[in-house]
Length: 69
Image 1 (spheres, one colour):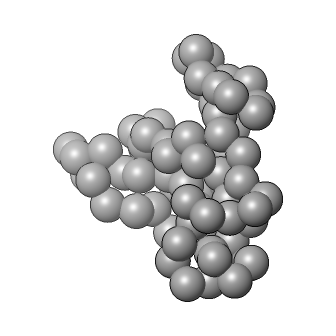
Image 2 (cartoon, rainbow, N blue to C red; image 1 turned 90 degrees about the vertical axis):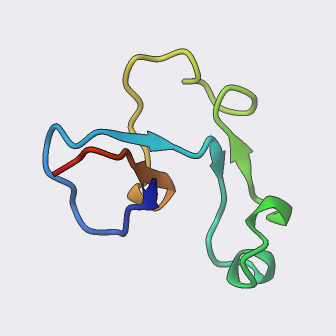
């Protein structure tokens, strides 16, 4: 899998998401230490959606699934 960037992905593109959602602008996030973000939330723990068939989220946490062409 590779990270999806902030561009719009075509409808039907298969992705999975990292359930850890971070702010992206604190010192920890800027250092690449997202797991230490004090503003982090976790899908299924601090926000609903872990058992959803579909989930709306920021492209920053999307990972493209192999086989998308």
